Length: 314
Image 1 (cartoon, rainbow, N blue to C red):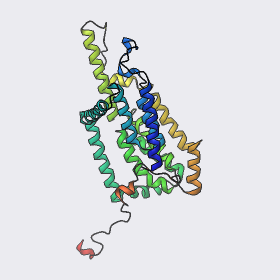
Image 2 (cartoon, rainbow, N blue to C red; image 1 turned 90 degrees about the horizontal axis):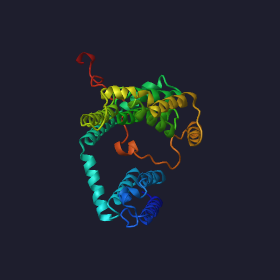
Image 3 (cartoon, one colour; image 1 turned 135 degrees about the vertical axis):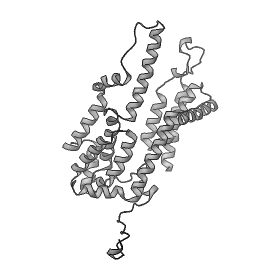
Image 4 (cartoon, rainbow, N blue to C red; image 1 turned 120 degrees about the vertical axis):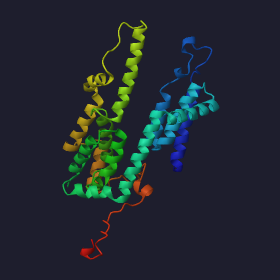
């Protein structure tokens, strides 16, 4: 992290934490009894702090950690040691949760698989195969969108696979990284939330099942007049037309890549990529430079074992 960035992080953190400490503590004697609980004092501060720091510094993990720590500080009545202990306990509990552990393991496997494809040169081979049919930046954007729609079984896998597979082709055809990121992001989660079968839909159906079971138990105990009798997947399916974000996000990304109507920073990024060939703006540092981590891929096709032998031997 650069010195200027570090100073900016410390300054923002100090200002926000001091502002938090100057607010009414949750257990103050003059606070009404019904409001004496930790979340009373500015409950939006932890996410706002994390989002602000992430945008201003580009450092995701420190921003998230500081946001979690401030939330734990509020819950622990502003005791720094207790807040730090609670933060670490939350991290351990979430990392060892069966569902979260499954997601982490799945991401590791997918990441290793994509890294293997990258090192072997398969990603560039795919880009070369697509380049025979895709010859324009509009075609590259549309191909990325279609591939993002096809890979629907998991949003994390969608991001990793589509982003890494299409990046060489997008760079070659002068598609800015900003537009590529927008297309990948706007097809990953929306597609996984709409196309009937995915890990995310499985998670949603699990939550609906738990809610239905709770309502049925309360109805059986006489606390409710009735409880839902429909199955959890049928209930999720009935709510599908109301997934407004997913539907509108997919519609918007197709409109953007087909008609190429950009505005604001996206328009400047596309003009830079098209006129100057700079897919990254000057001074931009990718959060995960693939070449630095994995090295340069194998771009030349290996010679066949039979190429140096007589034909009768093969």
